[in-house]
Image (tube, rainbow, N blue to C red):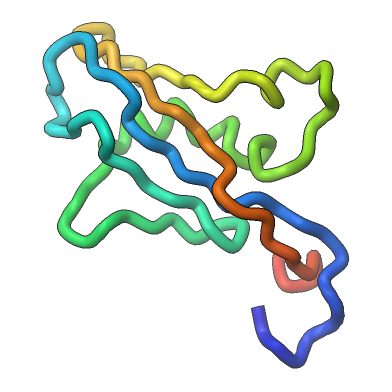
Length: 110
């Protein structure tokens, strides 16, 4: 986002996706507390020197665009925050949290 652009016309949440629990064996080498952040609509950030399993990422990715927006009070995705990795041996659960609201200009995103 450039500072000289038009005024923001929308807001999106930055998100943090954290490994909440691993009830099986950690095949991918992640541990409880590992995380990534989704900022500025589409910037994926990992702590330096850390990784996040691509299969766990793939399982939560379809929901992130919706979690970045305000949803109706009756929408199940507004209430649900836990998502599971597809590996049945791992039984890894991730928590999606909204960490901050970010004013944005939709023209910068399309």
